[in-house]
Length: 339
Ligand SMILES: [Zn+2]
Image (cartoon, rainbow, N blue to C red; front, top):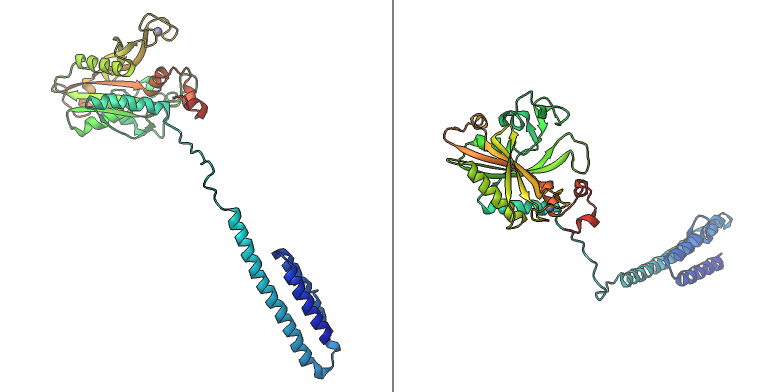
C-alpha cells in the first residue's frame, strides 16, 4: 500500500504540473481527490489493512492528500496569474487607433425657431414667462373673456382633467396670471406647449406650441402693436418683408386682427408657396379687451395694451419650408439633421 500511495502521489504531481490550464487542473483534482478518485479508492481499501498498521497507513494517506492539495493550490495560483496577464495583454488600449465618433445631435427646428423669436423680442425689452400646462378653466377661458357657453370650451376641442381643470388650449392664461400680479407695465413673451383635441394630420396635432406676447402700459395704441409686429416680421423673414392687418375676432382682444406678411419666397408677386396671393398669414393680435383687464384687476381707463399669438410650428414650417407638421414630431434623425 505504501508503494501504491507513492505511485499515486508521483502521478498526481506530474499531471498537475502538466495540466497547463485551470480546467485541466480541475480534471486532475477530480481524478485523484474526487469521490471516485484514486486516493479515495485507496481509503476505501483501509478496511483490509491490519488493525495495528491502520494509524501509520492513515497518516500516509493524509500526507499524500496534503501534498497533492499543496501542488494543486500552487499550480492554480500560477495558472490564474498567467490568465490575468494574458487578459491584460488582450485588453490593452491601442492609443493609435482612430477615436470613436461622438454623435452630438443638434437643436430641433422648433427650438431654432423659438430661440430666434425669443431673441427678437428680448431685444425689444420683453421678458420670457412660463406657466402651467395643466391649467384652471378659470385662467384658460373665463379670465380671457371666453364664457361658459363658448364653442372653444366644447369637449371635442379641449382635454378636460375634471370640470375645473384642463390641459391649456393656449398660452394666453399665462398673460392672465401675470396681469393678476399687478406689476405694471408688462412686456412679456410666453412660449409653451398647448393641447387641443385634434386628430393628427399635416397641419394639426393634439399637442403643439404657441408663443404669446403681451404689452400693458399707459398710452399703448394700435400703432404700437403694428410697429412692434412689423419689426418682428422684418427680423424674422428679412428687411424687405411688408405686413398687413386684416380685421378678425378674438374674445380677449378688441379690436382684433390677423397679420399677413409678404411671401418671402416670391417677395409678394405670387408663387406656389403663398398659393399665388403674395401674402402668408402669420399671427393673430389685438388690443387687450377692457373686460379682460377688469377681470385681472387692471383699470382699463388708465392702462391699455396689446397681445399677439404665434404658432411656433407655423414659423418653423414656413422658415424651413417644411410641408408636413408631422415631420416635426417624428424625431427622424435623417429629417432633423437638415436644419
Ligand atoms: Zn410667394
